[in-house]
Length: 303
Length: 249
Image 1 (cartoon, rainbow over the protein chains, first blue to last red):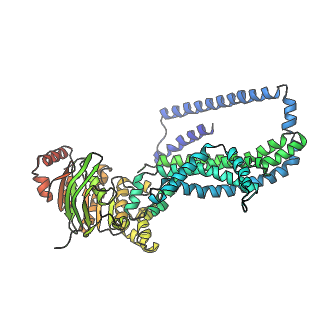
Image 2 (cartoon, rainbow over the protein chains, first blue to last red):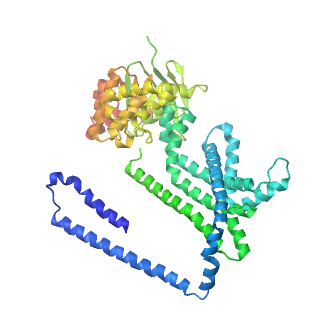
Image 3 (cartoon, chains in turn red, purple):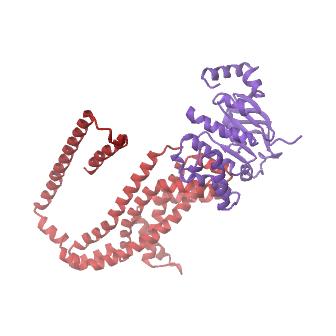
């Protein structure tokens, strides 16, 4: 609805430049056209509101009038209990936040390195190219839960002195291993979308291979892959919840402990809400970034 | 006699089984312009890319100031510092302002300080009537302005030789002239150049030597008057006739 209105005001202001010195007045034809557009927008808005009420209201009605609704709302929406355990869940969420910060930093560094290795053509890097390709293939194809279990229980089982048994570190490691594979591919695809003529122009100016990457290719590539990278960041925040299976006391684990004491699932709902409070704004931000990058690309001819 | 800036000896280049350049030999003395004409696909662009080492030749050699730049141990980056190339599609860096496009190579390749590089870039922009565009992004400029910026970018590193690859082919006729007059100015200042172009009138004005390239071979060469007004080879005559019909002479 807001889009429709936005377009309306745009078409109004779009006419303004021709209105030199207030001499121009819209013709009857244009006045009729605007009236017709307004009427159509109003009709569309009415239809949108009506259909939303019918669909969402209908679904809510089905849920609320179902025979199990009473017991379900007692188990999942016991708000008083939810508020009581909220501090513990928030405390646990702090673990998710710090894990996200550390993991995303590592993922950024390693992902970029692997993308660069895979797009390089230097013969000295050939073995690393093969290793990087195998790594990406393997860890993009394994469910993260399995990677968590393998790293979390496998590494301590080696009983090598000096290797950590800290579940938080192992959990972070598993997240980094998995997400680096995704992010490396996103960055690599960004590098590949930069037309070879850009590199040719840079090299012909005398810039070295590394300088061409640093000043010409990567800045453009990162601009293009910012939306998918933000998308991966949202996914990473959610997936930090999986480290709870190793026994890390994060938001999910805190909720699990609380609910196993009371046989009430409201703590899970509280944890879900906390995740949403972070991920929804980030998703909106991602959408806006994506829209802007599309607008920018459409506004400019690709040379 | 002074040594030519560029000397191309029996160069051959093929893509797979398709021979693109065959037995190409010519030399370009200092302060002169050699213009290559010929229909699309005759090998003009490939020749310029080979000179700039963006493509590898299959046989022969290319000498720049007497130094074989096609030798196995030639330092490609060092060679390219002495060569400027301007492309048909401009290839400006879209994420950088005009001024940064121009100062990038002087700063990063030649190690000139930012202040000096900017001063020099502004001088060049001023000279070619683009001083008010320094802080704009390339996409805000017209095609003709973009191409002039591309020319400025390549001469900002003071190359020994400037390669111009059909630099007006992507421009509408009105914008062609502003770009060509920029090149004429460079010629007057003594820049040594190799050009590939479809603009015969322009070729006549700036060329010291015109070479007609046909299916990867230099069929005919000589002064602009000789080639453009009294061609000897039937292929040259045919080509010029077609250009004339297209209204480009």
